[in-house]
Length: 284
Image 1 (cartoon, rainbow, N blue to C red):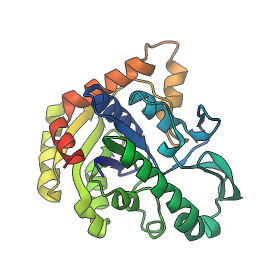
Image 2: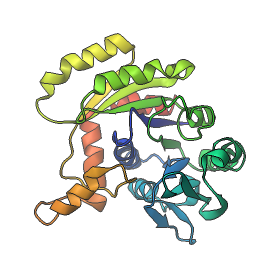
Image 3: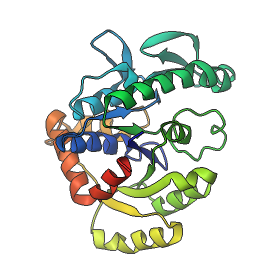
Image 4: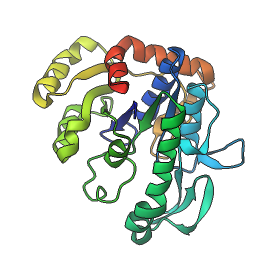
C-alpha cells in the first residue's frame, strides 16, 4: 500500500512528533493520509465519537491530518497496570485477558492482535491515499522480534518503506543508528532514510556526522530537525519527559499548541527534510 513508516532507534526519539508533522504536511498538499500505530502502550487515551478508547497520540495525529479520530488508527492500546501486566484495549474495548508475557506474546499477537491490525490496514488502504505509520521503541529489540506487531512486522504487512529517527539531544545518535541497522537483518533493506531529530546549536558542526552516516550505512539522511522547544504536543507515553517538563514551565513561556503546533511542525519538516524524497517513497 502507499505510505511510509517512522521507526526510532529508541523510545522518545520523536516518532510521534514526526508522524504528526507529516500528517499535517501532506494534508496541506491535498493528500488524504491516515495515521496509524498498531499497538501503543500508554495510560493516555482518547474517547472517540462512538465511545471507544484509542491512544491520545494517534487522536492528535488524526486532527493534524484533518480527520476525525477513529479506532482503526490504533487497534491495540495497552494500559500499564503494573510492571508485568497491562490492560488490553482491542478495537476500542477492554479485552477479556490482561497482557502478561506468557499470554500476550504469541497467544494474543498471533491471533486477535494481528487480525485486528490486518483489518485496520485493509480499511485504510481502501479509504485513503496513503498511510503514515508510527513504530514503537526500537525495531532492534531481538528478544521481542519473533512476536512483535508494531515495528518491522507491520512494515512488512503494509509493505511500506521505513524511515529511522534518532534523538541527537540524548547523545550517541550515530552509534544508535549504526547499531540499529546492524541488528535488523533482512529488514535493513526496508530502511530508506534516516532523520536526526532534536538537534541544538550550529548545524554546521553536524555536517560531518551526516556525511559519515551516509558513507557508513549507505542510507540517505533526509535531514536534521532542530530542537522544537516552543511546540507542545500531548505525550504519547510515560517515557516522554519533555511534555511534563514543558507543562511545568508553561506559565512562564509561550508554547504553540493545537492547530498552530500542527502547522509549525509541518513547516519545520518542510524546511529541514527532503520532502520530495519522502513523497516519492510514499507513492512509489
